[in-house]
Image (cartoon, rainbow, N blue to C red; front, side):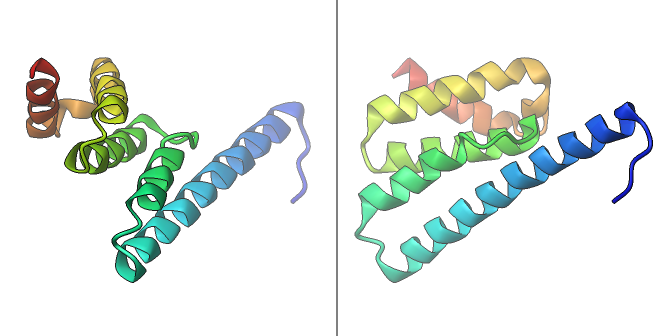
Length: 115
């Protein structure tokens, strides 16, 4: 790809960084799903992969889904400390407006935090 200005170069570099982050997130998610299907008793590895996905630099709507997924899995498997961390991350994303379409999920998380 040929760029002619510094602004174009910055734009392309930003897109490449974003592509790398999303590629990494999708590889982690595919591995997590493969583990769920092949060995659902390996809860530690599945939880680890769900948590790793939250570290990828994605847009807020996608981070919300990753945090929700990690929260749900950890909560169902009685890993309450880690689940509380991801619940807090979901609540912190509320200010971005991403939870407006997912209000029921936010209410469920807030209910669990109040317990």
